[in-house]
Length: 156
View 1 (cartoon, rainbow, N blue to C red):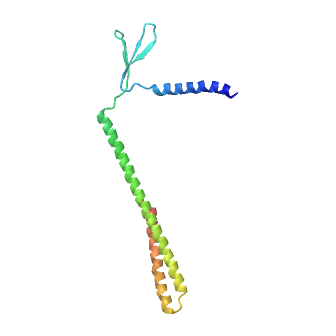
View 2 (tube, rainbow, N blue to C red; view 1 turned 30 degrees about the vertical axis):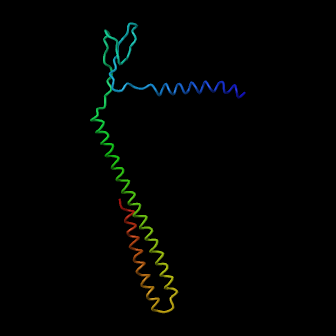
View 3 (cartoon, helix red, strand yellow; view 1 turned 135 degrees about the vertical axis):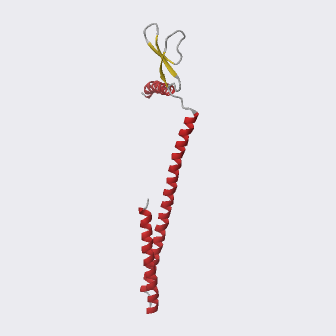
C-alpha cells in the first residue's frame, strides 16, 4: 500500500518542483524594447528581436535605471534609514533615562521607608527629630523624582 502511494507521490513532487523552477526562471525583459508584428499566418508576435524585412512596431519600452537615478534612490533610502536609526537611538536613550529614573525613585522610596522605620524605633526626642528631618527630605526627593519621571514618560 505504501509503495503504491510512493509511486504516485514521487512524480507529483517532481512535476511540482519542475513547475516552480520554470515559473521562477521566467522573467520580464527589463530595459529591452519589445516589438509587435504579424507573421505570415496572421498571428501576432511580440519579440525583442524581430526578423529582418518585417514591419515591426515598437510596443513597449521598459525604462532603464541609470546610475545617477540609482545613486539618487540609494541616497534617499540611506537618508530614510539614517532618520530611522536616529529615531531608534533617541528612543533607546529615552527608555534608558526612564529606567534610570525609575530605579532612582525606587531607591528613594526604599530609603524613605527605612528612615521612617528608624524614626518609629527612636528612643528619645532628638533621635526622632533627626529621623523626622531625614524622612521629610526623602519625601521631598521622592516627589521631585516622581515629577521628573512623569515628564520623561509624557515627553516626545
